[in-house]
Length: 406
Ligand SMILES: *Cc1c(COP(=O)(O)O)cnc(C)c1O
Image 1 (cartoon, rainbow, N blue to C red):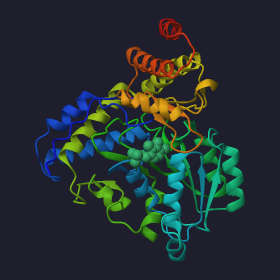
Image 2 (cartoon, rainbow, N blue to C red):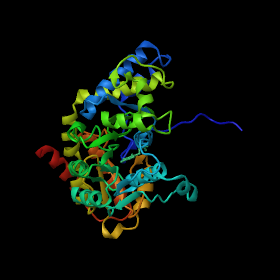
Image 3 (cartoon, helix red, strand yellow):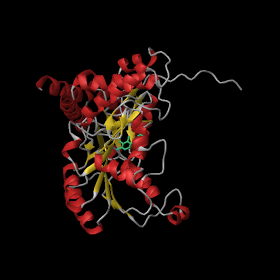
Image 4 (tube, rainbow, N blue to C red):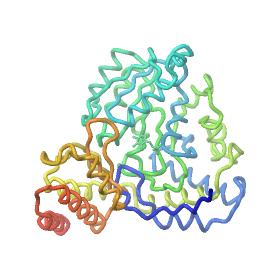
């Protein structure tokens, strides 16, 4: 059997992630020469990326670096601090915090609990607090659960991409501080989109993000993570069961040695291509400005939201990079067909991955009027084709008016 070369078309990535890759990132990727992981420019790139990441996170944490892989690689690194038998409270309000909860149950499970159901262990010491889809985790919910269960760790997603909901990280931080829990946050969907400094939430001892959403570095690169010193101290005392994702060992290659910046030492073979791409993505983000980016996301999300509402959809999300919506009554139930029809046209929107079925349209790296107009136009066409009853011209005119008025 012969395998023809793989040709992947250019699509409009308008889902929850990945975001559209900036041509500058791709240029760095393919104009980089082959060089090993200890070559001086590769090492310099990693050190500079580490320093830029501290700015992106808004932190002085020495242990701020990238974990090779996707968002779940960074989360795995962070959640490796949880050991069998640890008591953890996990707040779940959608697909991703649900998967994080599974990761935590796997890590905190006793040997017996893991063996009883290895792919979905029921872990007595892990309390999953389910918040209905479409709702946010509030400070009150966290406070009550931590008061009742007195855990060692508490976990939450900052922005839950499954349902498009922003959770209350200030309330989470305050409740962790009040009840003496070590906070852990999945910031996969918020880093690089919302303007926040993690150092303002000192009860959250570690954060994990991803390359492909706010950082916009899909060429498989690095999941940013950041650990407070007290987390690293605890880790030193107790250890954790991974080499590849060990936060202290992994940090060494980024030049973080004994809690301070120093000369990088080998941990694993980092790709010169990935380092160059990641470095460029961070330069682009900081050049644009974290605060400006957050403002622009909110501005363009509002344009998209108003346009889909004008088509009769009901928006249930409050993230600024993503709109999660219910189709108008007549089309309810055809969400998956609609999404499939759009994807057939290389217009990459998504359904929700857990029930209820909704449509998700994202605007990662689509921060201009033309891009939003393209997304709205394509979505309008797809809805009309399925029998929706609105006037497309009116919708497009409303969108143009939003932009000219603001
Ligand atoms: C996208 C996402 C993940 C998973 O990231 P991958 O890059 O697919 O591994 C985890 N958590 C949240 C909140 C996400 O939005």
